[in-house]
Figure 1 (tube, rainbow, N blue to C red):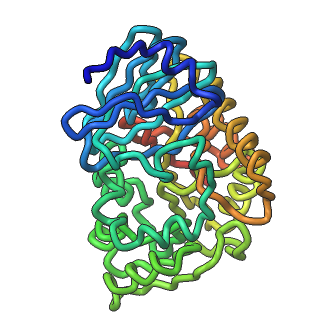
Figure 2: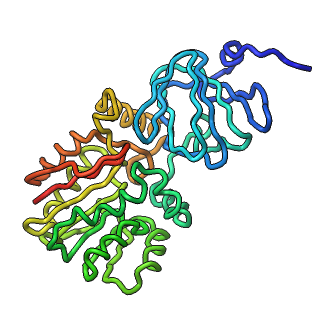
Figure 3: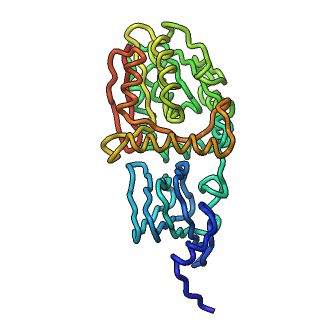
Length: 335
C-alpha cells in the first residue's frame, strides 16, 4: 500500500533529540528524520554514498573544507560521496536525511552513537589507511604536506616534528635536506611503525610519547614543525607547548605549523565558531563522564588570529601566514 507521509508530523513524533526515525526507503536509500540541537559532529566522509539534508524546520550549518553553509527551513543540500563534512546544530533543527542504507554508523552520527575516541586509539585504528585517506580530507591535499619543506630555514640541520605520524611531510624535507637529523614524537605506535618502514636509512629518532610531556631540551633544533595535530587542544595547553617549542629552538630557528584553523576569509564569525566548538567538547565530556586524564579526538580549531597571538605570547618575535587553502593554514613563527 502506498503511504502518504507528512514530514513535519513524523519528525515531531520523535521522542527525543538525535534519535533517527526511518520514514521510508527508495532504491536502496534510507530516509530518516531527526531533531538535533546544540551538537557538532566530528568531521567525516561517506565513501560510498551521497547524502541529502533537507531542513523541515529550524536551521543549521554544514561545515565543509572551504567553510560553512547556512541552511534554513525549506533548504536542501546534497553532499557528494567522499566529501569531508560535519553538521553544526546550534539551535533546534528538524531534518530529513537520505543516504544509502548502511551509511550511518557510530563513527559519523551523534545521539545514539555518542562517544569520544581516545587519541592514540583513533590514529592506531586508522594507521593502515592513513596515507591514502588523510590527504583527501585536507584543504590543499598532499601539497599541504610537501610545501612545508620550502618554509624551513636554509640552514636547517636538526628538526623536531610534533605528531609525526606516518611522516607524509618527510619526503619533500629529505629531498631538500638529505642529511637532516629528525626527531619525531607521536602517541600512536602503529603510525610510527609505518614511518620506520619508509625511511630505514635516514637519521630519524622516534619517540612514542606525547609531545605535551616529552622533554625537548633547550636550543637543540634549527626548526620545528607540526602538521594537523594541534587542533585538539585549548589555549592554555597550546600556550604552554608553544613556550617549550620556542625554547627548544636555536637562535634564528623557526617553527612551522600546518593545521586546521578558522580563517576570517572562510567564516562570518570565526571566533563564534571557535567558542562553540570548545563549549560543545566540554558538554560532550561532561555528558559522557569523561575526565581530562586522557587525550580524546575532537576537533577544536582556533582562529588564525588567536593562533598568532598565542605564538607571539610564547616569545616568538614574528609570526607570518604562509599558506591557506580551505581550512588548512600554515603559519611560520621565528625565534
